[in-house]
Length: 156
Image 1 (spheres, rainbow, N blue to C red):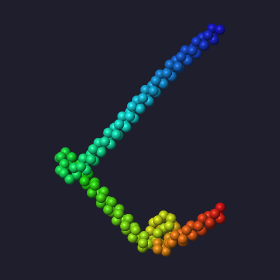
Image 2: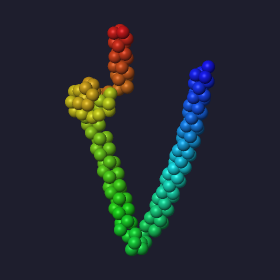
Image 3: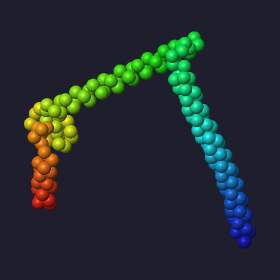
Image 4: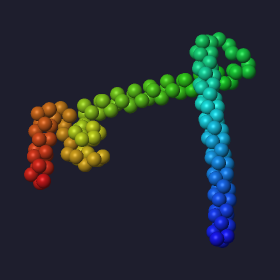
């Protein structure tokens, strides 16, 4: 019976070692998780601080837009003004393009599927048949859509 006693003793020793190692691993995992939480909190606070700095800078630039700036930030303010002018020019360009599209819509055919404008018989973007903008009435479009849905129902 001494064999079984020795085996039992060794099993208890191994179980004790495994238990200790499991506790150590658990403690390490808890430390890592706590560290990760703290790091995430630090990152969140840094983002919040950056947001506040941006707000201060934007306020300053708007408040003193017409005044002379200190030499230390003159180049930064010039870049801000240049960006504002570029944005205004791009917005004007976009409005001009939208106006041109509206004029073209009156002159060309509008695709009933994708809304693109073309003077072809079929849409070059989606392939749908095009209808003259002034000829297409709501009733015609509704009749066409109903006929297509009936055809689809019959195929099923």
